Length: 120
Image (cartoon, helix red, strand yellow):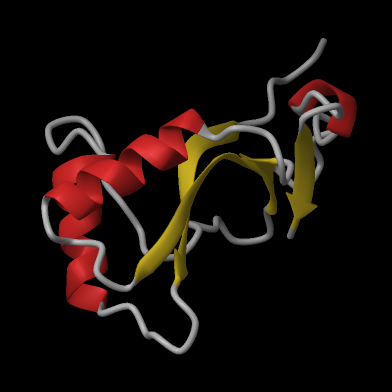
């Protein structure tokens, strides 16, 4: 008999500031609340959520691969006046795994030709 070990998937946005600029926490909260989530069904964190004793991984697109969702988020943020100090927004997929889970196999999480894996 096998017991299913819990895992959680979520969206990740890496927001990169222009050189020498610091992103205002209030602007990041407004950006997340108005653009990056559905306020009825989703919540946001300014850091990666972590369950105690869990393993995390984030899948990012490699440099040179077009990030359509990240570019559209940056375009919309600029149109709303929320991106004065933002240089780039990257989109990724985050995963949180139970510590005993054997699911953290890179081959099952990403396409190695266009994506890279960041483990925590």
